[in-house]
Length: 116
Length: 111
Image (cartoon, rainbow over the protein chains, first blue to last red):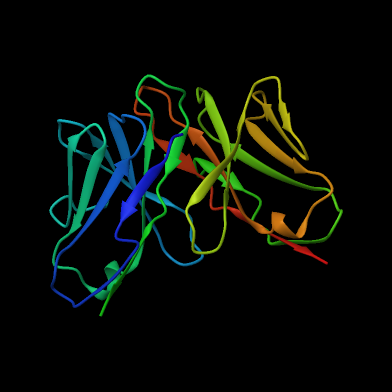
């Protein structure tokens, strides 16, 4: 149990385009999902906390208009990187905690974004 | 002081060795602690939660020292497959469920 999926696993796009990444909890409901970014050989950096039915909470320094988060249901959150630039190239990972369950976070397999 | 700090590593050990990682946290009110393992270009996977009384899972032992605000992970009889980056994580208090990660310690187990 406690499986989180992400789609796509890898995306290459041109500078200026927008990219949407989906995060799904497959066998549990999650009122809260988290979006992280990880640059090569660096630690996970929390970007935002995604709350079902309400606005996301962004970490300091993360542009909310650049990284649009939508959490429309208890099993789906999306991150859209708008007008992507090469510096947005990174590994984006989501995680989710089971609603009413233990406080363990389960991670999706990540999405590797390369902006040309 | 950073919220969560880990041994910088890297650690290079021979097979069969015992290796220990430490991680300190700055928020004394933190309640939940975890060790994750991350393989190269993969997502973190939960290795084990850390309980107040300490806990063991096979070759892995996790301990919590609240007074000194650190958690540790001990790996006994290390295997080649233990090679990975080990991340400690601390959950913030206050209901946000936000996890704060250390930078990770890279372990390489050599034959």
